[in-house]
Length: 227
Ligand SMILES: Nc1ncnc2c1ncn2[C@@H]1O[C@H](COP(=O)(O)OP(=O)(O)OP(=O)(O)O)[C@@H](O)[C@H]1O
Image (cartoon, rainbow, N blue to C red; front, side, top):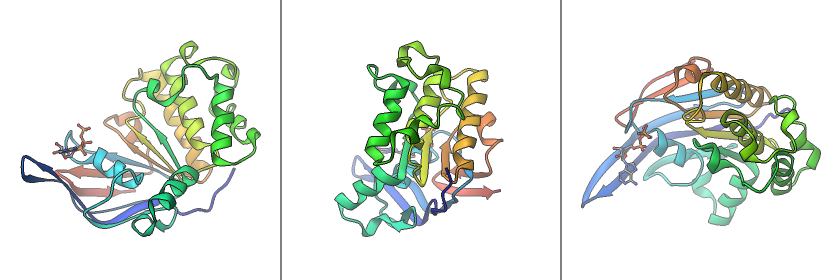
């Protein structure tokens, strides 16, 4: 599984929220680039703008100013239907709570078949991710029969079928113990090595210390972007 697709990024992005008639700036003139094949960690204190940035980079929200690109496409130029198509084909999402990522009545194998159908690729494409992510022994298990870390690895596999150009994970280890954190970081590495731009918002040093790039936000601004 290899990809030469460009990743995701934004240039000159600002986003404010209106609260009680006042504008609260969440992001101010932010430039971020998340190249294909690398893990980019987004870090910063609570309220610094991480979730707002992720919502923009997934096309779930639009900036007040600036441009956002996913897989080389300026998503501000797309119709709502075009944006939905791009998100379905080129973007994978992993949420913090393992329970929010999976359907209780589908086995691991059924999740991966469903992901392949959604992406329009051969069913074997999804199943091929089981072994590299260390969940091949769990193919016929339901989510409640898995540990939290195994569920997150299934969620990563589900999001990575295709593969997409970009996989965005919001605090992917936020609810896991230490041993499971290592397995999830290893899974993100497998996906990045396949050519996907992996973007993870995280408070967890075990994640960002093993990322290729770290974007640190503070009060809505990028204060450091380092390899
Ligand atoms: N829907 C909203 N309405 C009003 N203000 C918001 C909204 N969402 C976020 N904010 C404000 O925007 C700023 C950035 O919030 P954001 O959730 O992006 O930060 P964060 O770094 O993800 O925080 P956390 O680590 O606590 O999740 C904060 O001041 C927050 O209060």
